[in-house]
Image 1: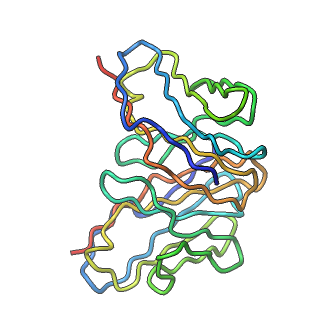
Image 2 (image 1 turned 180 degrees about the vertical axis):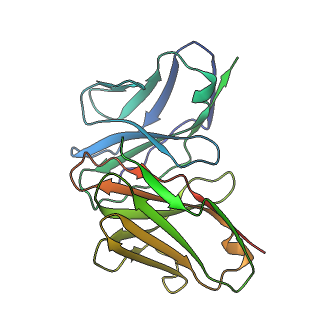
Length: 111
Length: 116
């Protein structure tokens, strides 16, 4: 799997958009970008994934650059409950493919 | 979304005893389940990949005789920590993939193991 690079930590004011960047410059053509988050002492939660097109769901939006070397996860209106560690992962499609978690970004939403 | 449960949520045991942790996919069939370990303030470390009906594949450095994994059905995988020692104290998390899905993993809530 391609390696990802994320900032160690970020702050965001409550109600504002949180933009979390991820660099995956060695991503291959058939690898997807996945985002998960982990709230303290809980199991990680799937957020969103994409291949090359931008994606949006009820939780977040995923913007992938045209060259696919980086992406941004956007939480449109951050709440205190969004405080968590956010992991960006690239992985091949397929049920047997393992994924490797990096260090992630600790997002602190500030009241 | 798909739900994965773990049991127990926490366990305290004496050094030298064995502990079994169950991971169940509640509303879907999981061909593949994964086991992770997470130490405080660290990321998740993949321990092994478990495929239904076959032997688990362990990551480098993980002792397969110490961490026994059994994936007996499409909804259940178990991790047994044998002869546990204090250094095995950690947060153990399982995840499961649907047979037919977009590769997203659904994670259990984790099991906190404390070995005295």
